[in-house]
Length: 202
Image 1 (tube, rainbow, N blue to C red):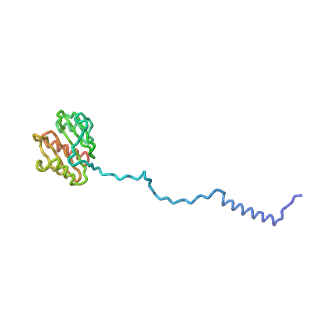
Image 2: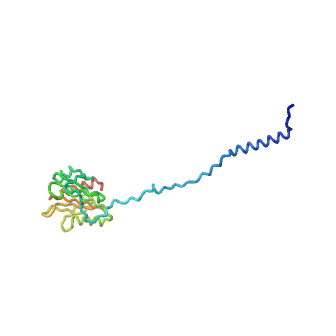
Image 3: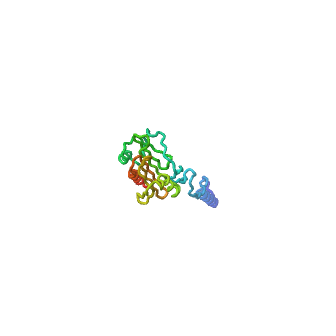
């Protein structure tokens, strides 16, 4: 004969089981996930951009280009085409070098003579007065005539003499451009200076 549970006891067991199941459904026994932490946008030290230094060289105002290989060098000028230089200055180019101590490299071109046929110096200075000082060094007021090309630039020019060739040096804001040629015509130096200013977007 099969035994049956008392009705009252069965109700108690069922109620207890239901509570147990409900509690078990709420807690599955796994550890509770930690609350989401609020994050703030932070940048690691490695990804912090370093402040960009302005393109300013710290050479003296009267710094002249130095090319270790001299007239036997052949390193193209980054802003002047060698063939164009030969055509404009009227001499075959037999050597070319750059001096990268300047923030914009200075360029020196040679032909058959020992001295350079063309020297181009671009100076990006700390102040306008420093840029003017570069022009005053390259084209002293007492030995040169006024130069005002291209528009907005100002400085001095001089034709070739018995002691040296022609030159053209101008300044705008904190930038100075000085061009020395072994030719007699300062127009050649001017054309080079204007082309440098255009090519570099100065």
